[in-house]
Length: 137
Image (cartoon, rainbow, N blue to C red; front, top):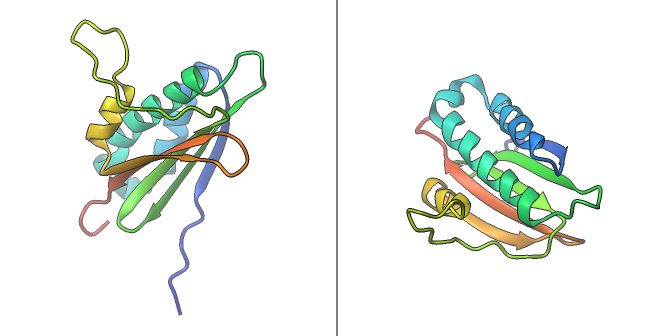
């Protein structure tokens, strides 16, 4: 009989800056306690960058848009998908030392084991990033 997987954790937050902190907290608190010392800081940073980008670039202030997060373990990784209603495809920037922004996906690219951008079936875009589970995790 196959092993039954965990049900993914799922949240929706308003597309407002205050949601970044709430998303970070929710995602890290959903990790098993034993994994928090290994993945908590990296997952917190991934969440911050991806949710901030989704709010800034994937939503319109006049809409009642929401940012959606899904977190699940699979294939030796913890995967985080951050989705927004936008249609743009985020790309890694190459900021200069004097740049005030543009480091979000640069950090994601260096922090995540793997990441990608996928269109959603109905509307919007998802950025999916994975962190490798520690040995024995």
